[in-house]
Length: 364
Image (cartoon, rainbow, N blue to C red; front, side):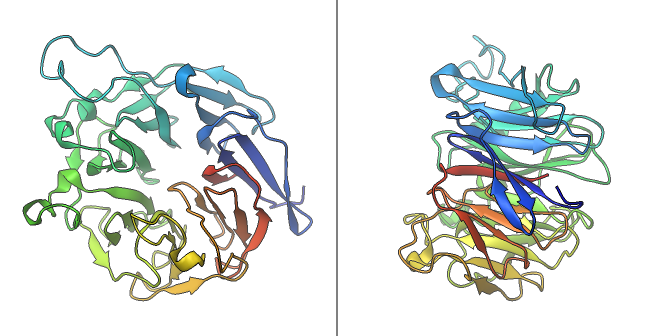
C-alpha cells in the first residue's frame, strides 16, 4: 500500500468490511465477522481496534484486534448489573440489558468509552478486559424523563473526548440532551442550553433533558467548536458545547442524522439531509451532501456522483466519516450504497450499491 494511503472500515449488517485506497482507487476487502451485524468500530493510533456486534438473541459481543484488524479475539462486552429489587430504580421501565453498543471511543489516557442502547455509559481501563457502568450518569434522577427517538428506549450514540483533556467527555442522548463531565465521569452537567425540541409542547421545547440530539461532532484541533444534527435542525456551539445556537436550515432539508466536522477548520462541516422524520429518505429522491464553509451562515449542496433520482437512501448517524486530511470523506446508506469523496465532499465516487445496510464508517 502506498505511503499515506487510507483504510476505511465499514460496519454493516453482514460484517465489517475493509476498504483500502490502492493506486488512486479503492478496493473492497473480504468482511470480518461475515453475516453478523456490526454496530460500532473504533481504531486506536497504536493499531488496536475494537468492533461491537449486535447479535439480538445472542446478545452484544465485543472483539479486539492488536494488529490493525488482521486478526480478532473476543473480549468482554459492556453489561448492566442486575436490576435492583428495591430503591428508586426498582420500577425502572428501562431494561437493564445492553441491546447494542451505539458509540465507542478511545481516549488518549487509554480509557475506552462505550455508549449503549438503552442509555448506559460504560468505561474500560484495561483494554476491554472488563467494563464498568458509569453509575454517576445512570443514577441521575433526570434519566427517568429520557425517552426513545427511533428506538423504544433512549440511547447514547455520541461520545466526544476532548483531545486536550481526556477527563473532559461530552455525550449525546436520544432523547436526553447533551451531558458533559470534566472529571472522568465522577460528575455530570446537562449542557443542552439553546436547543429547541419543536416536537414537544411549547412549555417543554427548551427543556434540556428531553432534547433529541441525533449526532454531535467536534473540530479536532479547535474542540471548543461543536456541531449538532438535531431532530429539529442544525445547531452549533463555539464554547465547548455549553450553549448551542441554531443554524438556518439548508436546502433541501435541515433534517438528518449524520454530521461531520472538519478536523482543522472550525468553520466547515458536512451533513446528509433526509426529507423529514416522516419520510426518512433522500429529499425528492435526490441524494446530496450539504457543506458549510462559514460556520453555518450558508450551505452548498453537492450531488455530483450521487444518485439524483429515485434515491431512497438514508445515512445513519455514524455513516459519514471525515479523514484527518479534511478532504477525504465517505458516506454509506441503509440501502447498501457506499461513496467516497477526495474533493472535500464536492464530488463523489460510488464504490458499491450492493452492500448490506451500513451502520458505521471509520477511517484508519
